[in-house]
Picture 1: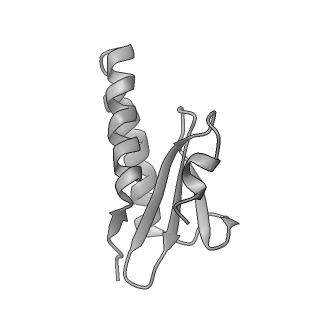
Picture 2 (picture 1 turned 30 degrees about the vertical axis):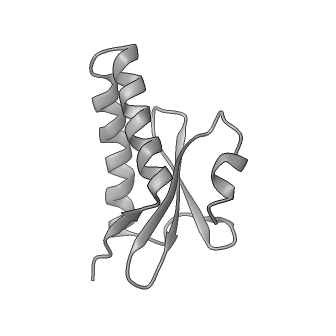
Length: 98
């Protein structure tokens, strides 16, 4: 059974805002960011437990080519994305969501 991905509201905003920011830096870069994060989401759906647990039951998946990580939980009925986090920022920005 394939688990659906659901987003914490702040994670969705981080994802969207980051794509817009990259697109403003250089046309096409935002689309590349979206594609790279989508590859992570595709892996999560295929292999939800492949990434290491880093805090409690939260796992971390690295986004290639960009300084981002996806923090997520595997729930019985879904994969919950907690953050699409710029790894150069303070991790406390997302940890209060767990």
